[in-house]
Amino acid sequence: MSLKGKTVVLGVTGSIAAYKALSLARKLQNKGAEVIVVMTEAGTKLVDPLTFRSLTGNVVPVDMFAPVTNWQIEHISLAEKADLVLIAPATANSVGKIANGIADNLLTCAVMATKAPVLIAPAMNVNMYENPIVQENIKKLRGFGYYFVEPKVGKLATGIEGMGALADLDDIVERAEELLQGGD
Image (cartoon, rainbow, N blue to C red):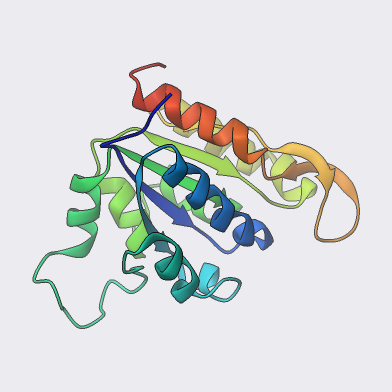
């Protein structure tokens, strides 16, 4: 499938899997999508926004209160440009904020303002992923019409094997394609 003419707003949060979002951005571009990356502050501690800017050719917004350079309200502009908002990797923190309507960073504000489908690919420690609060937040978001690509069992940052590793990038891209082609 082609993503030509589609804009994917790729949200990158503070999961150790943030480095995989670089390859994900490239895979989406190779399918023809324009990729605009927005990062949480925690995400910038793991991968520098300049790396995404170099890869995508787009400025990477992080701070809602950065000096205005384009005279647009950034989170509204991102929300309106998006054909799809894809959060990969998504931390328990970001999932919880979105599930509870907390819009305290540029990414969560853009998610609250968009009419585009939102696809979330969680990546976190197995104990966090299996926590009943996180599972309830995921269930709540599904009920609101958000989409998920489940994590997989794999070696986690702590060295243990468990559920919580970011899904295969090809699976994330395939799900994004389905949603952008009008699938559910």
